[in-house]
Every structure is written in structure tokens, then in C-alpha cells.
Image 1 (cartoon, rainbow, N blue to C red):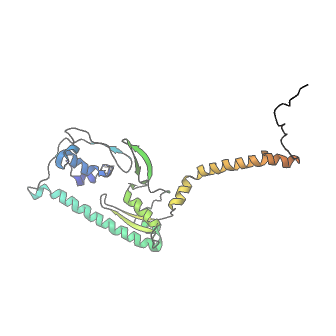
Image 2: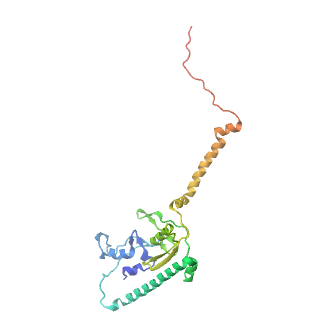
Length: 252
């Protein structure tokens, strides 16, 4: 059996979500430990699909569960407490290394500062604030883009875009993700305003529209009536048509 914290620590599955709901918390809520009644899973019933940051899908069913209870003896939780302490100590060390990289990057640059700590920086391509819409379970959803080595993480993407409009012009930030015990030093390479980004996205379609308009203008300049008159040096006027009227009366 796993606790919610243990499920959250599992790669992929621990970060799987369905809308705003996370799989580790829902796995416990849906077995009947948490209301409402109508949301609970029946025995052996399969849950709805959860998706992790890499796009992998998960569904689960509960075969057994044990309600929370105080430990009867220290030995019952001793290993778990020791493991939690080791993880927290390691996370503290990672946070310190992250702050060291952030401070050194201001003087030496991120590449040099990261390599001094034994970390290889990774550069992303251009990415938007959100991607979509995607059809999902009868509705349309928007997803934050997946970043190399990080996956889909809304906090990381939000921090990157915050750097693009930082009033003090900061280009680096430290992002701490307690859930995955991960620390990220992000540096802004470049940023496009929403209007510029939208233009670049529609650039090809706009170019085609301009091309069609120019082709029409050139056609009119070469084959239009005024162009023909200029080339032939003649004055063209349509033939006059006789005006029809009532027939003249005649008689003897």
C-alpha cells in the first residue's frame, strides 16, 4: 500500500492530473475516505484517465485500503521517518546548490555557473504560454508546453513568462518544486510580446493574403482597361446605341 505522499513521489504517476485534480490525492479520496458520496469509486471500478507532464495516461482501481491511524509502535514508522529525513536533507542540499548557481550566474553566466556544480544546462526552443485547444473527454482544454527535462509544469512556465515582463529587468530566477523535490535555475534568453508572437504565428497566412492582393493589383495594372489604352495609344469609347422610341405615324 502507498500513502498519498508515496504516490506523489513516483515518477510520472505522481504528477498525473485530470483538470485541477491530482492522481495521488484522488486515489485516496475516491475510495470513500473523503466525501462526496457520488464521487467515490465502487469496488474494482476503474477511475477516469489522468495524464502526466509527458503525456502518459493513467487509470487506477482500488483493491484494498487502510484508514489513517496512529502508529502502535515506533518500529512501525521508523523506516518511513528515516527515509523522509534523508529526502528532506537531500532537498535542502539541492536548494543550496540552486542558489549558488543563481548567484554565480549573475557574474559568470549560467553555463559556467552550472557546469561548476556539475550540471549541464539545457536550452529550450521558443514556447508559448499555453498550447491548444485539445479535445479531451468531450471538451476542449489548454495545456502548458512540455519543457526538456521538466515536462509540463505550470509554475515553471509562469516564472519564465514573468521574467519577460519583470520591471527590474531580471533574467534569471530560482524555481523550487517541493512536490518533485526539484530545483530549477531558469534564464530568459529572449521574449516576444503577445502581439509579436501572434503575428509570427499567423505570418504565413498573412503573407498569402498580401500575395493575393498584390497579384490582383498587378493583373489590373497590366490587363485593365486603362492599361490597354495606355499601351495602344488609343481612346476607346463604347459604341452609341440608337435610342428606341415609338414608331412614327404615317397615313395617306
